[in-house]
Image 1 (cartoon, one colour):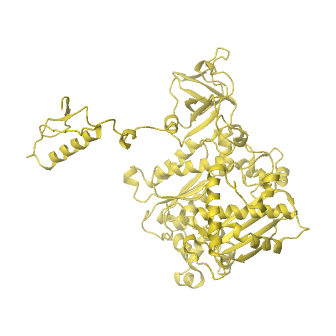
Image 2 (cartoon, each protein chain N blue to C red):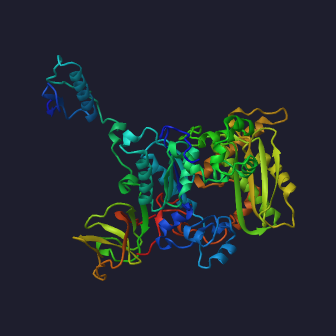
Length: 174
Length: 435
C-alpha cells in the first residue's frame, strides 16, 4: 500500500475513501468502493475513513483473465458505429484523392446522419451522384472535391444527401 | 352503424404492425438510387413478377404475372433478379430498429413484423401514436425504404390498419373507432379469411367485416371453427393472438420449391432438382432437430398447373439417403414425359422431434444410426464449404449443368470486394452508384 488515491464521494458523510491503487486491478477497487458506499447508505453510524485493500501476490506473470479483455472491440464495431444505418460503397473516380480516398476503396456511408461542416458526404445533386466535402456558409451549401481537377459544386435545383462517410477501408491483400 | 362501440377503453393493448411497401423493389431502389420512382420489378430469375414497384403497379404490372406480359404492359420496365441477400439485410435492420422501442417484436415474414408496445408510453415518454410514428420515420430515414404502419389493440386490427393506407401510411385504430374502419372492409381482405370462408360468409349475408363482427357470439361459435371465432374476437378488439417474440423454434411443415428455366421434360434433370429440394428441406428439418412422417412432392407445369403425390414414412426421418427410393417412386407417380415442367417442390409434413423416434420391427437401427452420423458430418462440412458440399448422387446432375438460374446474376453477385468470396460477403448492403 504505497500509493493511495483519494476518491471524493458524491454525497454523504464520509468525505473521502482512500483506495489503494497500482497493484490491484480496477474492478477490485470498484467492488470495494461499492461496498463502502452501501455500508454508508445503510447506516451513518459506520463512517468510513479509510479502506485497506491488500492484493494477492502472484509469482510469475498472471494469465490474461477474461476481465482484462473485456474492453476490446472488434473491427466491425470499430468501423461501423451504427450497423443498422450503414451501407458500403465502392469508390469510383478520383475526385476525393486529396482526402486519400482512391478508386476501388470501400467507404462506409451512414444514412440519416446530419452532415457537419467538413464532413464527406454522398449526395445526389441535380441528378448526379457525387461524394464530396460538405461546406456550409450561412445558408449556401458548397460541395468541394479534394482534387483541383474538379471545381466546387453549388447545387442549382436540388440536393439529396444519401449519407455521411464515416470510415474508409482499403485492403492490399486477400 | 359506424358508431357501434366494441371496446370502451382506447388502449387495452397497443400492437403495431409494420409492412414494407413493395419491399423487394424498395430495397433495390435504396441501393440503386437511380432507379428510384421508376417502373421496376424483381423476380427476373423466376420468369414471373415477384414484386412490382409502385411506379410499375400504377402502370398495371401485378405480382405473379409472367415477365413477357409485364414487358408488354410496360415497355420501359426494369427487370431485376431477386437479391435475397440484400433483402434479408434490410429485413434484419427493420426488425432491429423496431427492437429499439420494445423487445416484443414478432418477425412475421421478411417484410412484416408485429410489435407489442403496451405499457411503453412512460418508458419512452411518447404516446402510442408517436411510438408507431417514430418506428416508421426511423426505418424510413435509416434504410431509405417506406413502410406502412398500423396501430391498434389486436394483431388482426393492426393488420387491418397497416393495409388501410398504403404506401407509407400510418393508421391508428383506437378501441372506440373499430366500427368505422370495419364498415367498408370486404371480408376477404381480413387477415386469415380465405376464399372458402369468404363464400361461406357471403351465404350468411356478411360481405363486410362490420357485418361479420356483428354476428352474435352464439352463431359464430356454432358455424365457425376455432380460427374463425378467434378472428371474430380479434376484430371486436378482444386480443387473442399474442405477439410472439421468440425466434421460430419449430415448424409444422417445411417446404422447398425451385423454379428453373427453360421449362423442361428431362426426367433426369427434374429428378435432380427434386432431390435437391428434398435435401434442402431436410437440412432445415435437421437444423431444428425435426423429422417428417409424411412427404409430398409436386411438379409444376409450364401452364402453372401442378401434379403431386405423397407418401407416409414408416418412421420419421430427415436423412434423404434413407428414403431416396420413395422420392423416386413419388416422382414417377406424377411425372409425364410429354409435359414441360417449370418447377419442382417438396413438402415435409407431420414433423416430430428427432429425439423421440421409435424404430419399427423391420428397421435396421445400426444402419439408420450410421446414416444419421453421415449427415451430421455432411452438415458440418456444409458449414465449412457451403450448402450441399456433400449431396446425393441423384442431385449431382444439377451441379454439372449449373443450379438452374435464369437471367443475369444480381448486382451484389457481380461485385466481389477484396477479401470476399463468392459465397461470403460483407454483412452491409452495398450501394451501387457511380460518383
